[in-house]
Length: 405
Image (tube, rainbow, N blue to C red; front, side, top):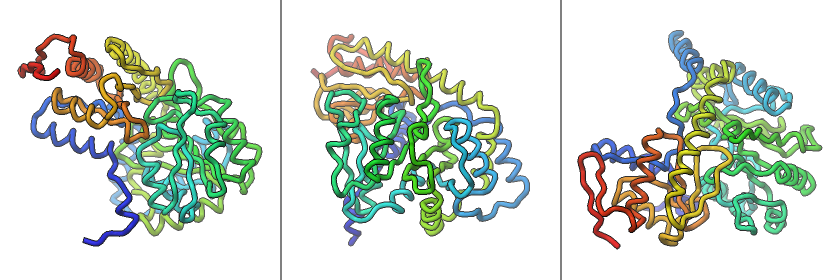
């Protein structure tokens, strides 16, 4: 079969593939523990469900404008004013089928073939593939100091004549790192000075811990005119636990939003009217669900950190936000895919190999599930990897005996 040159370069999404694998194993009745997941288990806000049901009851489920219905744009404008202290107009906003689509459409609107997009590593698994879909070149930047916190010097060294875009994701997937205010200020200033587009992927915006506050990129922008190349992307998936609703948005200059809307119109048309109404309900309703989720995740993070401390030799930096730990397992091997496969095969624990995020020897572990899954999952992992653990382990009624060294 002949497929395109672009298609041959694109890998499958590791995280979505693992979600599929977990679902298949659960369907078989296997006691799988999914520590690789990227969706909170808390309930969707009641206001979102009510808004969706009310619209369904009208029987009027029709096409929508390709850039979003007016009520959702109004809700996004309110959100931007409240949490970014930035007042924008409807023409500055495009709603999309998730934050992922907003980023993808922005890249398609900006990039020419062979231009470069820079992003810090570790990075979200989709960034390189999205860039390659535009026939452009992904360039990852690993902080030289060995931490998960980039400095502007790390970015500067990678910028060249073909650089067009920088993507910043903070709080970060997979590390949970919240980049410093100084770094955000520096990167905003740097992009303005060098006439580069800056995409702020803020999908985990308010899910930050230890009394931190979300950092507002607009605070450091000197150019807030319609010539600004700053693009802020967000959505309801993570903060509102509405992953399946697939509603995100982008806020940018009017001309760019117009071009992005044209592209999206030919790709998917407008997002579903029912799901947009649900997003309006979440954004305009009481915000207690976001804070409740944030508090739960912070507690879960502390539980995961406590259990990980029982391992000898692994290294983990305490996450500042999101619902992920990015853990250095190189004491058990350099090949993260082999480690992940070993844990799945031996003790039915699913983790995401670090190589998918640009760093070998690491695993991404999620604490957005239940406390039971976190504690039992880490215990199973320890039993499988730490040869000083007891020789036997029970998973339900199933007795496992270690037969490896």
